[in-house]
Length: 573
Ligand SMILES: Cc1ncc(C[n+]2csc(CCOP(=O)(O)OP(=O)(O)O)c2C)c(N)n1
Image (cartoon, rainbow, N blue to C red; front, side):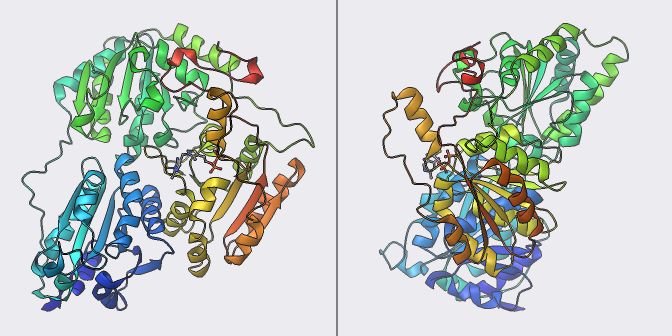
């Protein structure tokens, strides 16, 4: 069967089970948009290519399937670089197709030409420039394979216009053969045995669960390991929802804005069991002062992570799910002969920290609206299985702190890159992937202004996401740093509470808009929003601009210098 390169591309995407493509056409990708009309693949037309990339990420994060985006050459391609970088740091499987100028024009500064493979090289797991239409099926097969196996990540396929128009003989490769790419999945049995022994013998162990747990679909295994070994679990920002927050062994988020107990448990533990986590600086603070008395077991599918920041005592390269299963089996064998080390003193210490240093804020009745109060109400009124998507800033930290995640894959956020503007498009992508779930985006007013236009698509395509703007009229997180570390010298952080008018803006984009100014209005308005299921909804919560995120470990400082905040009397512990 003869097909054009463009037809072969669409057919290859279909063969890979692609359900939806997020994108925006232009000159160089025009040939591919034509056969898309006949394809069963749904295309969602975005308003900015950044929106296509983040949508694909939101879709991938909640479904576990790769997100697919398609854009044109030049500015279309450069506009999607931020999502690629975001997906690279958060290990999100993405397949991005970019149009390119004709091969004869490459290197001539042609209209809308840019070196897309060059620009994207450091922010993709791999990329391809197609030079023969006949290569398209194999390249697409490989692209999906690389994006979804080992440590997942974004890949890019750059497709010149003449190659899209070139004829080829259709064929579909049954297998992928990439001799240079063979991720290690099964952990080393000797290391797994060693890890199990350390866990059984530890007096003060703690599990440091990272985003890799979710990527490996290992939430069940994590729970089994924690319960079997009576070990508390700290979940990083990227691992929130991987372990139920209502579980007695759950300690919540560590790091710069982690809760006291999670941070202290790391500092005082004698065994740190790092599972799919990467010792990010926002978690460790000053590395030399991090978990000083701990031996470290580090499990990661990416060998480059082992020893990158902290040298592990037991390094295990492998898929978290399989490795945890292996550890569980070994632990069972060991405890059949000798019980776990007594942990009652350690458990008692953890309980004491939890009692003494909970998260705290004060919502005065009828007083200025606190962002944490809005979040608690959103959480308490959310239907079971609600997916929460956040932007980046104070609201993101409060969301992670105050939401109670009980179902895996219900939190979607930009962790590694910290991309403002992520929430609105990622929420639309999440809702597209899980239309049966309620999807709430918790956004900052600054973030919202970066990508709000994507709500036009949400209205047109009937994707009824819900957006809660915690509107503090500032670039709040930056304001917080200027207040604490720059002697309240506020520089370029004021935004205004009512310019733009978020309700009118929402309405102009085909959404329902609400405004909430008092604590008493919070719950009734959320209930109204929850009842709307055929249109996107935006709530503009006018919250206290002075509220700061605590606890806080100042950047570069030791985790021992955690500041609890004014509710505890200013100062450390
Ligand atoms: C694209 C981008 N630009 C700048 C920053 C730096 N930054 C981090 S948080 C923040 C403020 C975010 O403000 P807002 O969305 O209003 O959220 P808030 O912190 O007030 O909750 C800024 C500017 C960033 N993370 N991303």
